Amino acid sequence: MPAIRRFGFELPGRADSVGRARHLIQDRMTRWGIDESHFDTMTLVASELFTNAVVHTASRRVLCELHDVPGQLRIAVQDEGCPPGEPRLRRVSAEEGGRGLLLVDAVSSAWGAHDAHPGPGRVVWAELALGRQC
Image (cartoon, rainbow, N blue to C red; front, side, top):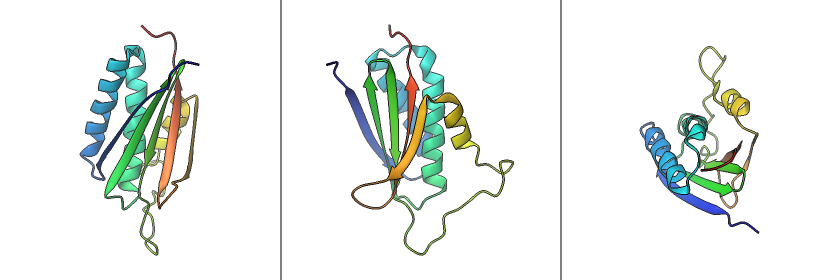
C-alpha cells in the first residue's frame, strides 16, 4: 500500500494568514514533488477555504492539513466556529462575495464539510485529482 504523506499547520484566524497558508502549501507541494501545474489550483482552493474560515467564523486559529496519496491531494481546513448565540456573517448575494465555494466546487474533484470532532467548528475539505507526478 502506498504511503500517505501528511502535513499540518495552524495559523491565527486573521486575514494576513491566508497568504501565509498559500506559501506553506506551495512549499510542501514542492517538497513532495507535485507537478507545478497543480500549484495554482491548490493555492486557490486553500485561499478560499482559509478566507471563509477567517471571514465567516470567530476563529482565533485555523488548522490546515494536507494529505498526498497517489493521484490525489486533499486539503482540510478547520475553523473554531462561532460562539453560541452569535450569528455567522453571511453574504447576501454572489455580487457581494460568496463565490468561494463555487470556485472550490469548479476546480476540485470532490469537496465537502462536516462538524469538527471533538470540539466546536467545521472542517471544510477539498480534493484535487493529480496527473502524473515528476
